Amino acid sequence: MKTRDLAYIAIFAALTAVLGLVPAINVGPVPITAQTLGVMLAGSVLGAKRGFLALLLFLLLVAIGLPLLPGGRGGLGVFVGPTAGYLYAWPLGAFVVGLVTELAWRRFNLAWAALANVVGGVLVIYAVGIPFVAVYADEVTLGQSLTGSLSFLPGDAVKVAVASLIAVQVRRAYPVIERPRGAAATP
Amino acid sequence: MTALALYVRGTSPVHRSPAGLKLLALAGLSVLLFAVPTVPVAAGALAAVLAVGVVAARLPVALLARQVRAVWVWLVALAVVTAIVGGVASAALVTLRLLALVLAAAVVTATSRVSELVAVVERLCAPLRLVGVRPARIGLLIALTLRFIPLVAERADRVREAQAARGGTVRGVRALVTLVVPLLVQVLQLAHTTAEALDARGADDDEARSGRMRG
Image 1 (cartoon, each protein chain N blue to C red):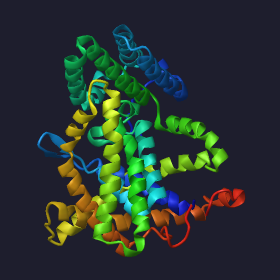
Image 2: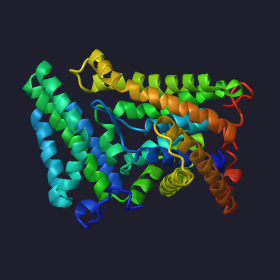
Image 3: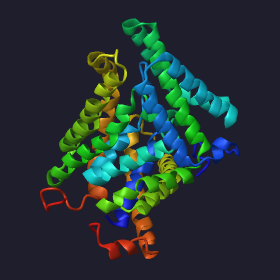
Image 4: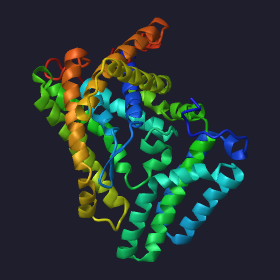
């Protein structure tokens, strides 16, 4: 990995942190934060591997006590709470967004961007986060956890739209993924 | 760095004990709390954490309260659901356990400097050498990100100001897109120049020598 890759990874970890400063918009009782936009953008701009590492680095910084999550939360405490599963899902989500983006890189358009963000930025996050709540709190069933997270869907739809529009424009203006999957074998 | 961190300056024994030891104690506590799920153990742990944090380390109570406030919605929801399904005793257990863990983590992070924690992370990552990751690079990544966070925030402000100066008053979703696209192009360029500057100062030297990582 080149120094440039390290700098890209660091800049997206930083960007995710800055997105956490954007005040949450309340949709009903549910705060919608811009931070998971970082997951989608890291994957769609940097690709699978670097996107994964950027979010992993971000979580590492949170773990060592930087108050980078919305509301100035941070420290190891957030990794033991019932919603910690959503955090653990972020690097994985960025990886999947990046993977789909790389696979579709040559014919990449708004539809592909939306697909990548829905699969990686929404489905993967829920697939990890929802069972985690149920496992953590023995008495909360999977169904209850699922219903609870439905309230986040409107916010996610907005974020998918924003991230997809951005991904398409940044690909045109400053493409970072140089060796897409399918063009040459990338390990 | 400290302006951003949750660290609270202090000279107490808790502040002075090694960060690695504190992290180990935190890990041990979480294992204990889940291995022995009883109310007395959880209550005892919570009392011990408060004693260490407030009495021994003399941390401001407001700081600890802030960490609790961040999870209180969950605490209440969890307590109510657990009480209905599993009874008051198990609700008490779940609540006390979560409180103890959140506060313990807050105490560790408030009494350890970020630089110390970075050093611990580098040490913990030492085994990754075997798969070709150099711990020093992880330290570099952390340092880079800490520098980039204020820079990215500043660039975001500048883009917003520039757009306002040109009379752009887009709102809603479009506003976010028109802000983030130029911001991303700028910060990607920033990353690129930073990498060039680092390479010029020899950041990739040992990589070329070891030749273990793909370049």
